[in-house]
Image (cartoon, rainbow over all chains, first blue to last red; front, side, top):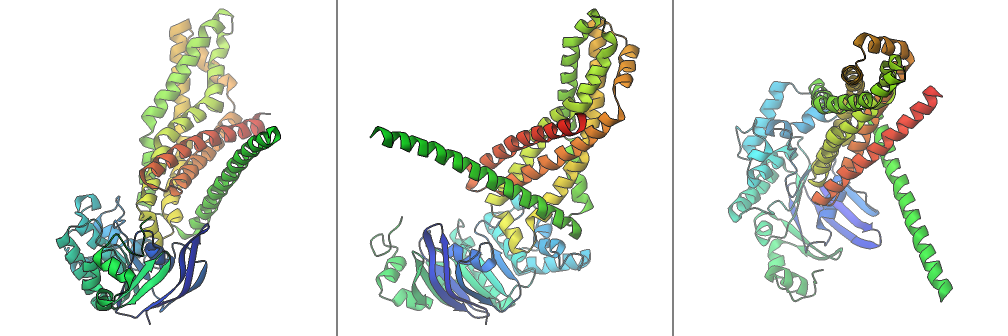
Length: 238
Length: 266
């Protein structure tokens, strides 16, 4: 089943961030959430990951871990790559002491290989490029074999080639883990290359839901404005 | 019309007072909650020996040169100011006692506390604040690792254990500094000075000094970590959290000091 969100509502003070949002992502599928800055995209991820509390509505998951890849990687800068990736296995209450050093090394090496970065265990985040940091954060996210993976603007701040590489890894991780994934993004290339379905948010409301092809074909004012990156249209930048 | 303006100003003043009180109570509440969470976490062995040793080194060793300089110079200044006069008045035999009581009861702990807040407390606050604004703490939460247990525990334990060590060494340096200064300024012999120290100092003073140091170490690290954890809004927020941590720690140790003075010496 993956993840199902029903009638999700979130307000900050008097400002309504999400107003009755519903969607469903099956295992092994990727949903892209798109929309202007401040439309509530990242809030959806924070609610699903439990970083903030919802006001009302339901978030139903298949169980298992929820992993999140943050916009600027959020690697622990005082720890090397090995400790970053194995952090949950070393420090989580229910996993602490479960793995020997040898097992941890094997798991970390496997995850690094999966993101194409073998042999960098001893490097610190400051020694890595933005794209490499992002891939290390992918490896950290999947170390506990999560059932749901959330990506918050995974290609933000990266050059086009690094972005393409990251998009390929998102698809690869989906195929390897069969997790339900949600990708928050602004970029059409990320949507085209990764998404099975798309949800567009504006002012806390869902204004489009469909496939990437439908997003490009759909002739509603919202989708037209987004696809053509037009300033004029029903969506106003604040 | 006149009444209307008066009411507006009164309202504004009351509003400011109310907001200040509200924010004070809410911050205190957050710090207490973090303290409780830290205590709860102690059951689960949330830190490694290596991390604890690193924090002890950071708190107790790296801070020592500055702390000793400050406390040592304070005692020298005090001795220089009073030793000459006291010897002239025939009270030379009390110089050592006065410096020792001042050091052990007050100066060493409070001056070391100020030095440690400025050096270590501020660095802890900015470290955690940076982690907060760069989403590292959120990442920790998503990985299901309690950030209060993981980050606070080694720091608070190290601060609480190392503070008495720093204060005792500082007191000894302070007393020794007073002896040298008294000898140079007024020709008071070392024997007379240290006889006076032994005569004036009691075990009770030392016990209170150690207990107070434990409390200072706990309060400084808890407040610094707690403010760091409350940071938001980027670089500006890191600066704000660090400043708040320093100011709150200063005020807190003075209040703790007052409580100890009232409870243990009156």
